[in-house]
Image 1 (cartoon, rainbow, N blue to C red):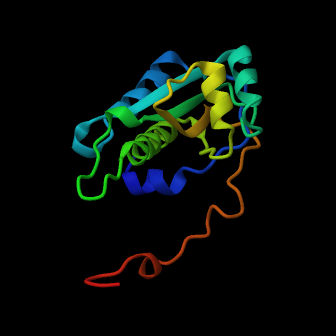
Image 2: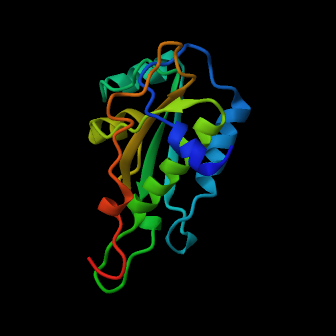
Length: 172
């Protein structure tokens, strides 16, 4: 599939079928994340794969936005392993983790899987439930699976600003 076609086709899936994700598709999605660009190729992302009823119930106690997905990827940023910009000390761990998450979401769509970006969760509770080290920042949760037959993009999906509203040439 052409990239722009994939980018247009992909939407935030909030209704999932119960069909499990095949291990080879999950592996391919995770590989897409592994291959994502990160600052100085430091690769500070850490991905927690949650599958099965017990793990998904534990996750549901930390966020109401699991959408009954059969699995989820919890995207974390290891602050101790990221590039830090010298002149102001900006740690790029979370930026890198977001790039990785985006790659995985696009790869999932390429393989017929749906996902959505969840940013509303209790990070401390997730860290406690799943044993995240102190230096990990829980950046996003990606519920993932096959879209349900009734899955539809939200009404906001098609609302895109024109390019000239989001891009400037030569100065702001």
